[in-house]
Image (cartoon, rainbow, N blue to C red):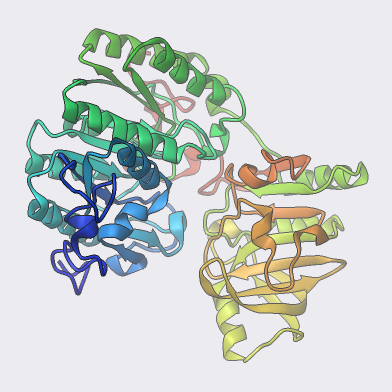
Length: 522
């Protein structure tokens, strides 16, 4: 309790319609005839991608910026919207939103979730679940890479707590990001795990819809969930997991082929999230079939073996350092192959200045750095009463070990105000047509139109430097916006880089995972 002050049960007073959502959210027609709602399904969301090596500090309950209740839960994010939309098509499902947290300040650049926060939010969900009983189905919108102090497998713990309440016969389905770290524990308590097959994650709503169909079929008695799990023994940096390139695309295509060839088979592949120091890190295969254990094992074995066969290209890769990247960018500009999108893939805190310095030294112009984090600089501007047009001469970024050293930025303050949910960001113009956006925390930009704010217009720039590994390809690459893409490695074995053996793991033995060793039985 205490996580959602003001509504101790979370099951009433959710809107002027009262029980229109929680008491009778019949997706055929709210407010009309509710007699068709023969199945009651609870919905909860608890998602965080946790970088346990990041310096942002442990995440308390107060760091979760939003508390969702009732109807708001049912409109929270792509996974849930896909589930709700599919459920609406059936017309016989009543959805009940359980209290759910959302939106950690600093996102995945923050460190461990505290046990107190995790237990508090989960206790609130379980209290709402007990108040809603009896229910016929459970849908959990999860991530898979949440890390919690003293809870080795948080998502499995969530499923366990729900299973304790609903009993053995109620279907429990979860949806996940492909960066999840999972093993067989989640499916020990749940019946289904649906994982995005695309990175960037275009198919989140698709997986939510699949979860709704699976739960509905179990409730109707036409599906008996049977599962198999495999751990290939491969760990990869997330920048290598882009599904627009082989062998990553081949792994997901193989999963889709199995689903197309075999009726009622679902094949989910987690690539893993190496920045979480958790025991189930690395790739995982989950297979679900309709009462056919032999088929589930056959598909799981095949996917497991295929990932192992392509392990060299999947887990080993290299990218240019900032100076080499600067040369590539200059060559692209000279050839007219602009705009150039540059992915600063390893920068988890958002404060790295390596690329800024290298591009300055190379004389690259008309470049937008979006964005570099430095809350202290922003606080100083606000305290000084700064305004657009003021001269700017400050050191920015470089305040964490992976960020390098601060960079001197001399120019003119062009904007100080709201952007991307922050109360204060700054835009500083400098040099010949270049600009830097200064933000209070790590900020990942996936679409060039996000830069159309205040005095900025994306057409002004030839080069865009973003703090992103793969997601920036959504708006910069896979739309055709930027004919040149350059992904840059950091000049040191820091968190976020491809040098995973430099990370101080305490709960992971890298000698049991390729490419740093061999798993047992291989």
